[in-house]
Image (cartoon, rainbow, N blue to C red; front, side):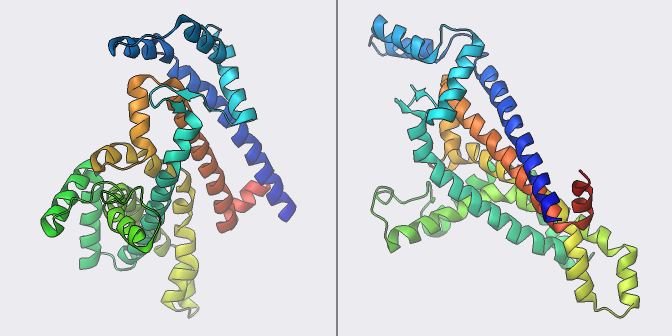
Length: 336
């Protein structure tokens, strides 16, 4: 059994690597579609600012990044530099290597996304179970209405409303992740508490739609399981209702939730773009938005590439988790 599982995991890993390469090719093709290139735009911005760029520097940059070469050569230089040297290129938008940009913004973005994801699952699964077990109760109606409202209200609008309420109640809109003067301060208990206070609104706003969606999914799956014959058989054999629900029904109902981890993390990760602009968060979402507008191809391409890796890796983890949780899925996977 273990050998078959590891063979399955290895097969999925190979498929994941091939998929990442195909996506990287598609990403590079898309970011090079607009006319011109980032170097042309950079020269144009410098000219508008009254500054000039030496022809020698232009030639040197074109040779270094292969901008005067065919598309395939440009792609190979980009992907080989990433794989062999960890070099994602240079961002003319921020005038620094893309690796430095990622290093500066990836930590707060990942921490915020992961905490939001944990919040999403911790809230949605228990509420979904409660609503299914207590179908048509006042609590079920309340959570159902809240779920539909949460899915219908745009995240950025919810962010504006929560900032308004925060200002009315505390006199502080809680913009950003830190208070003024705290961002560059050394880590201390005061800075950590300040971070926690400023994280409440971003976590609520970013996680709202996914929480409501997963809550509805869990409720529907749980209702399906509660209506199946094995539940009636268990009751006839004298099993307690709580044991049937949590030992059997929840375990079967949670499978679609486990399979959603891949896209759920990416949705949260990418969903911070507009919210980050509204809430003034130091996340990659804002940088990505500016890079796309400025046609900063290496910064935009690297960010899209990282999101693709996250999507494929999340799907890989979801497949492994589903094979571990569901014996039926595990048996199907082990056939190969």
